[in-house]
Amino acid sequence: MNKKKAIISIAGFDPSGGAGISRDLLVVNELKEQGVGVCTAITYQNNFEFEGLSWLSNSQIEKQINVLAKEFDFEHAKIGLIKNLDQLNFIVKALLNHNNEIKIIWDPILSASAGFNFHNDITLKNLTVLNKLYLITPNKKEAQLLNIFPTKNKQFACNVYIKSYEEKENFITDFLISKSGSYKIHSKKMNTNGIHGSGCRVSTAICCYLKKNDSLQIACSKAQTYLINILKKTL
Image 1: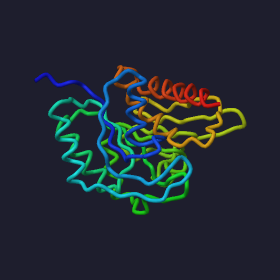
Image 2: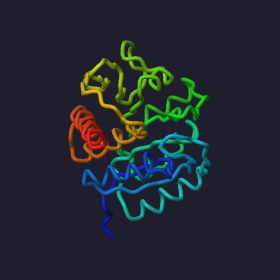
Image 3: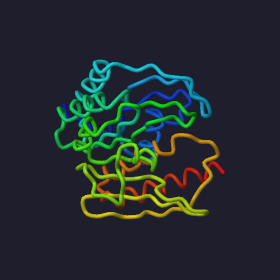
Image 4: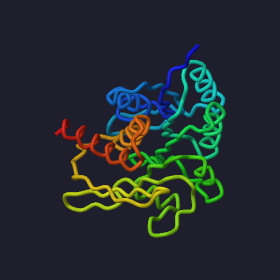
């Protein structure tokens, strides 16, 4: 059987549809790519409140990946909410077992917008898993928690795209640290109107544009433009 190429999203299930697997697959569909999803957790939330979650085990996650891999080839993956960095390492190994050249993007969700903290176990030792990734897409606070600072030499092999690195009255600047250099990507500041999942949209859109063979810098710029266009529709 000839396998179909697909982007795989490995993330939590958000019943409000604002973030997680359901949002990732909507973005992939809007950008006219094939997408499949693997669930890491079931969250109890709406667009404004987060009441908790139930985690799936590594075994349950691996079973989902393996059965999908029988039908699809994965050259690009987006990972969202995960239980801890040990689970991230497990998922990355599972993906690499199917394609050792897969480009993996991790959007590190360290806390919910309602104030729920997911990860308090971050150390430099368990951050070595980042060397197996292609790109991580933290916001400024998450980058600091991951010990990533643009003004210092980057200690991990992966590329880093820091969302909302600088904010001014009318503009937001994202910061891309790649193997070919560092770049600032400017965009107009938009009111999110309480919508969560904007970072989820950006990281998934980057995955889609990379699949379309855009360079990383172009993919990041297009993903930011995509988000702005989405936010304009909500105003």
